[in-house]
Image (cartoon, rainbow, N blue to C red; front, side, top):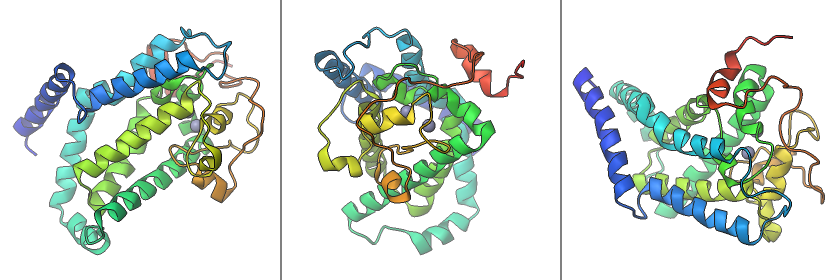
Length: 285
Ligand SMILES: [Zn+2]
Ligand SMILES: [Zn+2]
């Protein structure tokens, strides 16, 4: 990828984004995000789980900013172009083709390919999420997500920009290695977006035994508890709760946690600018 094609990729990214904003449709991630958000928003208005929680939360503006910043602005500011640049260099080494030849899923039926890719990606994310809680320097980054003091669907995409890199680099590598098509990747994102919105929402859905498979708002509320119930945390599920039940990190009592948020951080900033640099600020004791 030469300099002029890097510039071309960057500008095409902005042009494609603008085209998706002005042409609403189902195959377009911008309008999909808006539609899923509106549906969950209406559901929260009609049947809220915690009735005392205000609809116009103090953090709503900040969370909506993060939602569009992380989904669209951060990739458009150069991250998508940089990823494409590295991907094209890695592809040109030939190593990827060799590895892909030995682990490719393309010989499997389409549905099995999709399900396998989904499971591998989700298990990878569950592990990355645990590492974010275990390593102190990474926890500082992940604290932005946990700093929300009330839970509602926009908190799903409230996270520090560095998490885009921490999660996406291994994820893109898997997509590149195993081989994936755009429709599969789009479907995986649609399912993850919807379940992520629902498990952060102020909604209690009748999941029944499906709570052993999918992450629910009851489980994820405990993940955000201010007083951590045990160890380095509980319920690390992103989309599938299955991993927490299998590996002993599930926590599912009947009651709700007393408080949501982070503890022991009196200097945690309220502003976006403060939060973007928070992990690397020198802290006064
Ligand atoms: Zn977490
Ligand atoms: Zn969360």
